[in-house]
Every structure is written in C-alpha cells, then in structure tokens.
Figure 1 (cartoon, helix red, strand yellow):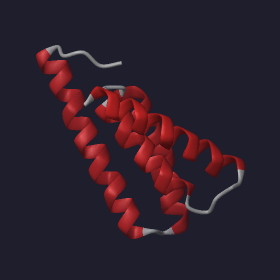
Figure 2 (tube, rainbow, N blue to C red):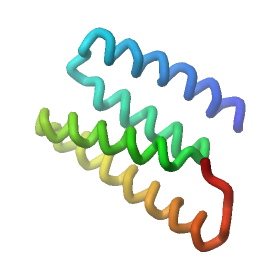
Figure 3 (cartoon, one colour):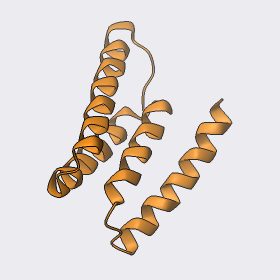
Figure 4 (tube, rainbow, N blue to C red):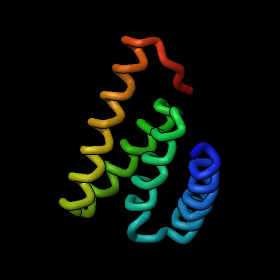
Length: 92
C-alpha cells in the first residue's frame, strides 16, 4: 500500500503545482486531496497546513460541500494525531 501512497502523492503534488501556477479556481479541491494523501503517509504536520490552506480557499469561494469534506479531513487528522500522541506511533 505504501507504493500506492507514494504514486498518489507524486500525482497530486504535480496537480497542486500546476493548479497554483495557473491560478486554477478549484485549487482548494486539489489541496484537499494532497492533504488527505499526506495524512495517509503519516505526514500529519504537513497535512494540517495543506488542509488549512484548502479550507481558507474553499471558504473564500463559499463552496459548502468541499468545506464539509475538508473539515471532515481535519477531524480525521486530529484523531490520528491524538492516537500518535497517546500510543506513541510514528508521524512525520
């Protein structure tokens, strides 16, 4: 499964870079995907920053469905972060 997350990260990172370079109006959707991949790779600090940027952009567009998904992702990330703190699991 780790290889799948690496490939997913590579693709979504490229998509994120392109969205930023072209000022794509839905960049926040791609950022949400990037944050999710980072979370699944255990890179919680990075994921939080990306989720926060995605949320900021989504709120500026008043895109409620995406805002909900981002908030759900942040909640899942918070739960995973807490688990790491309690159980001493590894995160990056």
